[in-house]
Length: 137
Image (cartoon, rainbow, N blue to C red):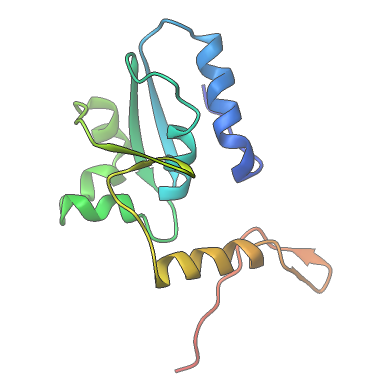
């Protein structure tokens, strides 16, 4: 099943719903997005007993991949993600929910916060899904 989310706020709720539909079954979720999408998926899962997550990086920073130190090419191949064996990663419970063993602070977080405010900016009556700022050279 391919499910497209319309907003970042709906991801965790949608994951909870899908897991209730397939309750008790072994499931692999393919997260197509950035580290934020992956984090929102994690926060929709109560028990990881029968759940595997594959990460297909399509985000702005993909901070999660940085822990693999250059071995991230496999994440960019759907065949590798389908055939791959799961690896255990640490989860951290915070007052904002669950996160993976990487935490973004500083300029990365500031950039993402500004991006999220600008991504639906209207230019000449047309709303753009993505808004890219290019600094002058």
